[in-house]
Image 1 (spheres, helix red, strand yellow):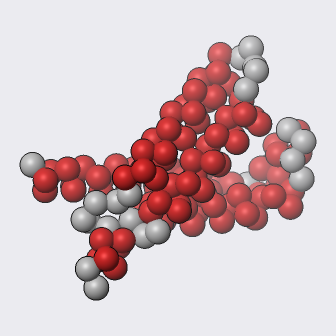
Image 2 (cartoon, helix red, strand yellow):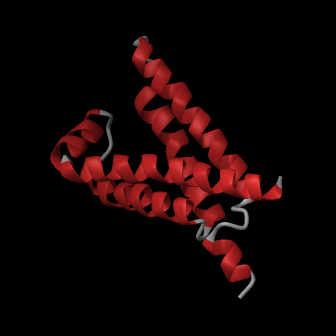
Length: 129
């Protein structure tokens, strides 16, 4: 059963990481549009590069299981802030869905922060090196 849980952990981390890598890459490809969207919500464009670093870097780190707890903390805080800044308080049903999805992702990252990555991770390889 332990092998199954290790595999499930790896698959879950890859799925989580892929979402943020894809989202970050999409923002890179539409840099100006993303900066405009941020400006509409009162955020300066100077925050876009660290946002992209968090999405792309954090996604890769989570997927690999490298510095997993730190990456989970960063992405969890990112999801929480995204929910509150971009989606909270809207009467639009789609925005409400995005709000709750971001909160759920933040909760998932808190679980990953608490538990770390299992044996199929770079973290585990470094512990045994």
